[in-house]
Length: 404
Ligand code: EZ4
Ligand code: CO
Image (cartoon, rainbow, N blue to C red):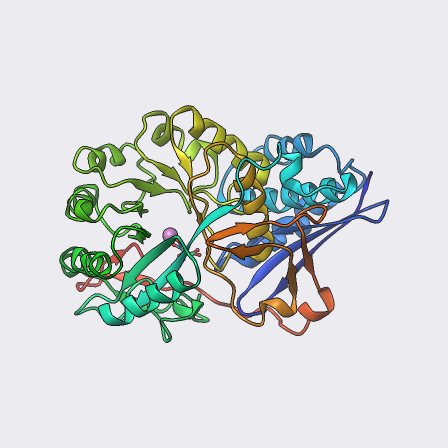
């Protein structure tokens, strides 16, 4: 089964997505997600100019060998652009293998280890009453887990908040240039425990609560936050501190029993080796599209399993439905699944993508179509051309750059 064509499509149905299409000589087509938010064209060029030509004529069944060929064979290894490109190829090849076998990808990964995949939704609010109403919306829809974020008094713009807090536009990559926000840690650290207390007072302890710190704290500040949230028994706090310094998580751990999740900006197993083998985290949140695809993410989760760390796959809206489907197949099959993020996608995403995954009673199932169960309409994609978009940046009051 030889690869005959490799094509990259960059389109913006709701937001920018880079999509990889691999075709084989027996007419099978596989889809991969090559989206790297705010850097889409770099991955598209990497695939179009440097990877596509190398794949023509290769046996599409040899997923592991092609992975090593692109990783070891590329000499430079790792990095978000490379690993997103390799992920797109890997996921497209799993899609093809599933179609060739007539089986959904999760069956090729060993079959279902659970009935469905528990997801958490994103509840947001400009203030606590608005947040409570949004949490109610998820509870009513059957979600068993909800991420809670609010605006912070005194700060104009905050991660998790946007024009309309009840939809997924709160975090657009929103400008042709990055917009600039102002950040202050003090008000946030004082505010968040009150927010979570209010959610617990309203909803009790029957729903899992999560929160995303988005890399904004120092390790000792994260320790303080984790400790102040202990009475409310969070499922996790996410990305409490930047993790280029993996050892920094030991400092957080020394101060709190609040579970820790991290990993959405990681792109290889080497970014979390120390975190996992030293048991410094509880959930590893690397994503299928930024961490080398199903092949590599499965290695990350297998390493994590050895050390009692569970999966927590990133599932934001800038990961396309192809990535979300791929994540669901892996989530369903691994022994140490923890939680899957589900942010949803902005209309008119469904004019371009059609999906087989389904939600019921708090759980997603990837469906039983052969392959990933996702289709991409190339003609429809042409109606939504690429638009330059960037995530915001944060500065402190004195103008210093800070993590957004
Ligand atoms: O800001 O995926 O947990 N979810 C997140 C996301 C990230 C985006 C960045 O592209 O933190 O919303
Ligand atoms: Co996050």
